[in-house]
Image (cartoon, rainbow, N blue to C red; front, side):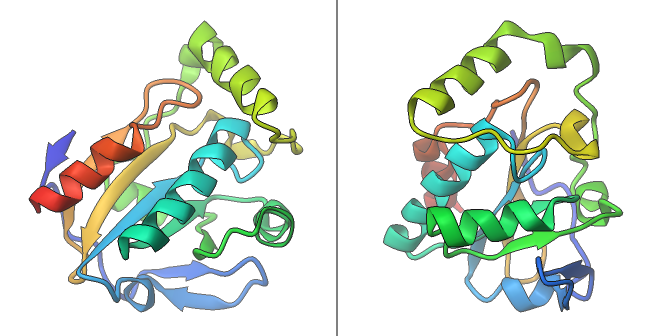
Length: 176
């Protein structure tokens, strides 16, 4: 976890699953926004954490959205089949990841047995596997941005399914 590491340009362009361009600043309307970096939208532990943060952010009145590099159809599936309300955005060039230093590939850590356990746990919770995409090697992560695009807190995972407990994110947000 890191305190204030960088500022992201508010005009950084992301895309909706329909391919429409949106700026990062359009999604930083709350004083603090939780941003989840998914490996890809079909990753089972990523789906499960995404559903949890969507539910929690709504209840806690925090801004939230998720960003993936690919799999627009999986983001659409999460909205339509899982009822996810927060924005699910695409960043194929991973520019936002670059700005917040969430670019470290998992490499050999893809084989960490705790990642397999996270997949099994998500299967038991009713999540369904989706097609694997080219972004499977990306580390999962979470950052909290303020409305100026400043990174106020970050957590970059070291294996598949390595997201912090949601209470840890809420505690960090309450301290900011």
